[in-house]
Length: 334
Image 1 (tube, rainbow, N blue to C red):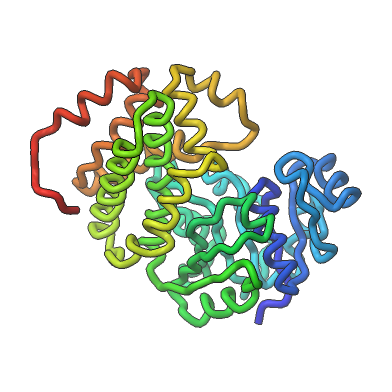
Image 2: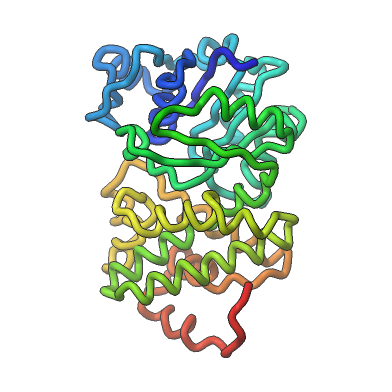
């Protein structure tokens, strides 16, 4: 039974989910890397760096001590940038309880290994995969923190464990569903960030809704192709972790990946676009590992390939459009 949570990462989504748990009645220790942020959260009951206008419940205690944060935690929520997960977990694993559930809020594929986040968690924390859950869905952090109605999916190989996590994070504004399709939920979350970059670029170049709808639809087809090859259920991609998360991330100005892509579409460099935000646009880094995973499994992902060309091979977004549009005709399908 889950009685206490540790949320490891005090960015916007980690903070917002800590608030969900506290609003649901669960005591939460929120770990932040910087002591000055901890002091600010404890002193003002708000996260001034990421969610400055949101009042945090008294049930959240901030700390910069990972050992203290993890002490007695039945649920360990991981909310750090995906490419730093392994390094952080190597430092934390000795403090994680032997029966704790570990849940990933991260949406990415690890560079080099091509592992999904749940696989990185299991391998690095040295736990069985049925102790690892993932959360995915249309969950823009600010809207969730404001208490706007939203739904999500909690996926875990152990159905009973997913149900227990579902029980402790349901509120009047946050409705969790369960799934055992960890692969599908994670791939939906990882690839949608790449497609959101593409939709943002289209917006930045002045293209309209037809273009963005095309990118979203064909982007979902790319995601499903890869997912089916890796054993996911096709129905996952028509649900919250698939089209739900994709629609929110590709459409909202609150989406870091979409707004980052929009800056690239207007002609900014990666460095110029990054200078406007203190938060990570996961799709920029993960697009390479997503494409590596697709190529390793002989899955065609042309939109993802185009984003890699723009972000990491120096191609101009406008030069890549004819490449995508000039591909050989084919029947619609996944």
